[in-house]
Image (cartoon, rainbow, N blue to C red; front, side):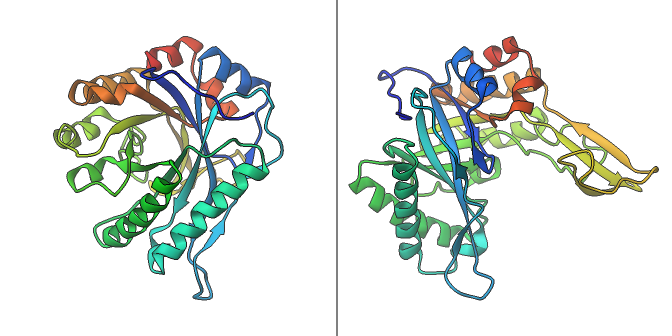
Length: 293
C-alpha cells in the first residue's frame, strides 16, 4: 500500500522524486524513515508538443518497477507540461492527463490519487492557455475529490494565481546559471527577497519547496556550455572551467524564515527537491532536520 494518511493539522514533510525510474532502495528508505517523510511527489510524465503537428503527447514516462508494499507514504502524481504543448484542445488534454495518471497509479500500486500536481513554466504569453487547462482539470478533479495543486515560481507571485486548490512555491533556480560570476544561481536570498512583497496577499493557499541539489556547470572561455550530469557526458578541454554550485543550509533556512514570516501557512508542508542518493549524501542528517524544523 503506497498511500499513507496523516492527522488533520499535522505538518507535512515531503520530497520530490524526479528520476526516470521509481526505485526506493535502502538508502532512500532510510532517509524517508529517519526524517519522517510522509509524502512523495512523483513526476509521472511530461507533456510535449507532437513534432508532426498532432495532439500533444506524453514523454519521458517514469518506469515504475515495483512499489514496496510497506512504503506507506502518500504518493502525489506530478505532470510537467511544456508551454508549447498548450496550443490544443485543452479540455481534451486535461482529460488525457487525469485518465493517464489514474491508470498509472492503479496499475503500479501507487495508491488512490488524492492530489494531482501540475508543473508548467508559463509566462504572460501562455498564461491564458495554462489557466484554461487548469480550470478544466479543476472541474474534473473536484468531481473525484482530488486536490489540484500547481507549482508557483517566484516571478509568478506578482500576477493572478492559476485555478488550483493549492500552490507550491518553488524557492530555487533563482539566478542565472549561465553567468559564471553568479555564485548562488540555485538559491540566493538576495534574489528571493524582492518577490516576497507579493506573497502576503497572493490569493492561493501556499506551501514551499527548497533545493538540496547541486549543479556542475561547464564554462568555456567564460561562456556557459551546459550542466554536467556525470564526469564524462561532455567533452572537457584543458582550458575549460567546471564550476560547482550548491545552496547552503544557511541560505535555505533564511529563505524559509523570511517566507514564513509573511505566510505562516508555508510551514505546514515543506518539500525538498529532490530525492536521489547523491542529494541524500550531500548534507548531514542534522542539516535536513534543520530545514524541516
